[in-house]
Figure (spheres, rainbow, N blue to C red):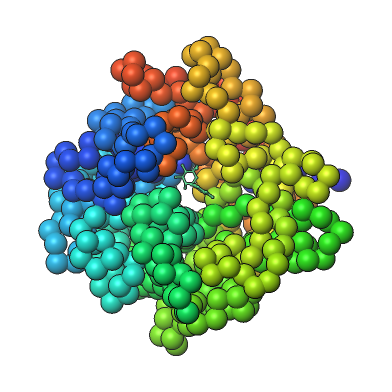
Length: 479
Ligand code: PNW
């Protein structure tokens, strides 16, 4: 069998997100996002912290670009803070030139260093003003226009310098964690509270629906007015992890795995590639899942130039008894870290949900490729947090064999999928360039290939894994 390889022009690099690294929440006119507000609610963030300083990248972006260059990265995926660019968020609100300039400077610095920018338009930090005005994603009429206007501001300002656009990062997290469970901003749980009443608990699905429509509308704008001139591509990034049956001999568990994948990935992927929600979701949710009008479907179907894939782990999946609970979002399944025989998914990590399983990654990317008819795929996030990393000495942290081993497993599995499974993957962005604010887990959890000494002057120190990632791609990208 041929040796696993990746294409010579394979695009690899690192990813980050605005709220997790920038800090400077009120500098140069930036206004609050829902994450600024959410972090102030006692108990929401494990260590009581917030993104006020984070990695201070707003002031240190040149240092961070130099770091990318030092690590050999070809590309850098970062996100734009909407409330830095349009502090109040709306289409009639003023654009903040100073905020926009930060991103233009960052992009220029990247180009000056030969690094290709990949821009995420939205990575969770919705302007607080839009949530206060009309509930954010819940109001389609207002929200879609505001989002498309924001996207236009970015396309106009940066379009000539950016060839890779991502409309949304992981809408599953924004909807389920943000608009139902309350684990993420804006912590909107009102609908869940009345979830036992009839056909309520529709809000996460409505939020998801409106996100899809706004994605489609922004893609249409890009294709109508910018794509030909600027020569770029645009797509959405979806998250999802591989599902393995808890009892491989139980057809109900095997079927439950498909449902779990459909409820996480196909929820958003099917409308984009097929024009409808998955049948399993319609069956379980009925009218609680919106229907696409003909106009909406036209906007959403076919709206990906590429598929952005985020994945971290795998899970064992066990079916649950019928009928599904009203507040269920996973396809009526139980998500487990061990199978029937006590075999774990993989070694433990700091984030409790994240057990590595490289062969699961190979199967998942093939599943995505098959389901969506072989889209061009960019892995836009993949990485790990090592258990107890924050308690180790600096020397120990810098020798992160665990993370190095994770990347060896995952990147080789990717090369196998490309070489043997006919998967069209053109790029891979590791999460993350550096340790940063890990949302509800605060700073306890570190995902970086670079250590950030938050208390010691924000020094950045590459860990062993950064070297391993570069070696992997230098060796594999020869096809
Ligand atoms: C992703 N889950 O988040 C995000 O895109 C990143 O911003 C984040 O830092 C990274 O993965 C690591 O967590 C997720 O609970 C957070 O399933 C939680 C889940 C999935 C993705």
